Image (tube, rainbow, N blue to C red; front, side):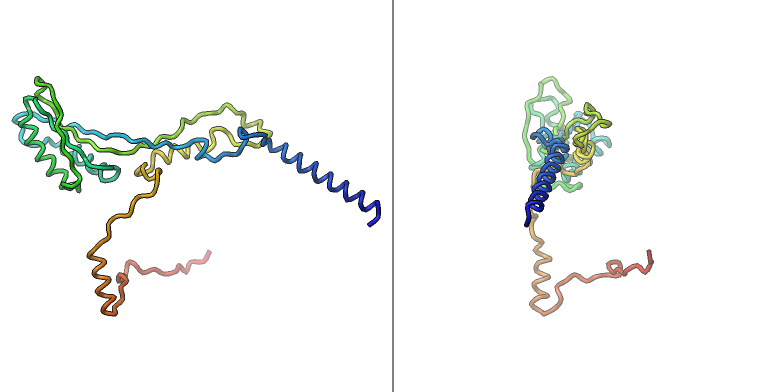
Length: 234
């Protein structure tokens, strides 16, 4: 290798190093404040514990629950089945003029909850001290749930028309994060995976019996379960 070749090689290496330095400088990554963070980091979703409550009016002499109370309890039971954690607690008034009527209403509420999928094992009971002059002290239904919140959107402080560093706008991904926080069925799922539910002993015994008899253990497929490849050509 002659001197001219070595010299040309050194010049080429210097040019490549200069181009790389210029490229890095053009990206503008001079510190953590310029890093390309994801929307999950710049607009995190926070999940907090909350208590959902429902007051059921109790009027002495009233024959059973009103239609509006029944509708409210049914909706409350559905919400508990979907997002409830721990027991559904029923608090009954103590010391109020309608304490006796509250005991009668409690039985109606319990029956209605059972009709809507809330079993006796899901319920907890506690009294609360009501005012002696409060003749309409309610039954209070409550359960623990989780709610999700994302950061507020609308940060347009950076000029999108002048962005020499080609960085991400401060508002990037904010709407997506807020939509996710609003749409997630159970925000507790954002904290971690759910625990496995109990096994189905009936199905398990059926499979074992078929296995011992040498029969297929898979579920039989019906006509609606069959599928065919479409013959439509693109």
